[in-house]
Image (cartoon, rainbow, N blue to C red; front, side, top):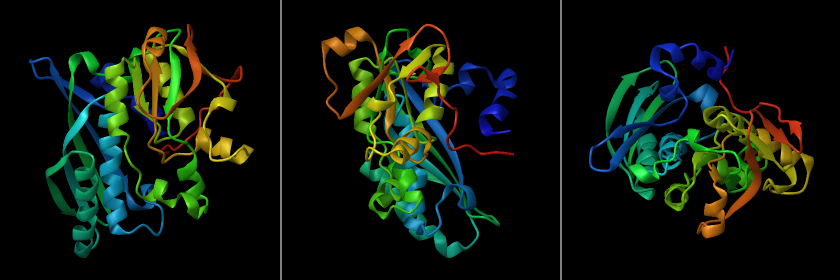
Length: 287
């Protein structure tokens, strides 16, 4: 069983809407929403070996800030709860958290410190977005264009030993300005691809109840090899944004960011690459 299957077991308790997105949204009553997202990271399962505490802190902040950005919101604050195996790791870790938060417009506003057998951290990010620009996973409709920012697969290649791409793995940069801009342009659905492009496509398909058809040749990759395509489709750790744009939005104006159109949505369900059902594979926690 993986984390997505396990999540289904608590949908009756919490609700389908509340468990189908990375962010929760709260109506502030003034045309604005506050959004929040929380993530738990463990040293043995989430931090590649050899990472410094600063890099761990940066990544911990980035994962939650990226989720907030993928809803179209501007991050504003971050909480960090740190379970420490060694107390001397706290300061360099929090230096990384603060550096990442500051770069992307958020303030570290508090958290908690505890003693743990394994270095463990929980980050919770908050952001603000207008109601009209809020962009969950569930808004895609048949006929939308499927788009992605960045070059997926570089983090996986770094994890496999390609040192050229280490910055994409160790200090990933959430696409905050692009997420805000895509939402304002009129993106119908959006999420990041940190668990891998394939899993993200399947998550978006199920949340929006549409079929996704992609052209594998249109998927950006770091070179033309089959290995690079495999990394792009199934590798985790990238922080590009996957989003859908209605046809009229595509015709009306271009997003001021680098992105690629990789397919279209249609009536139905499932994810297909070149007409063949795409394997649902990526970064998951398993039991």
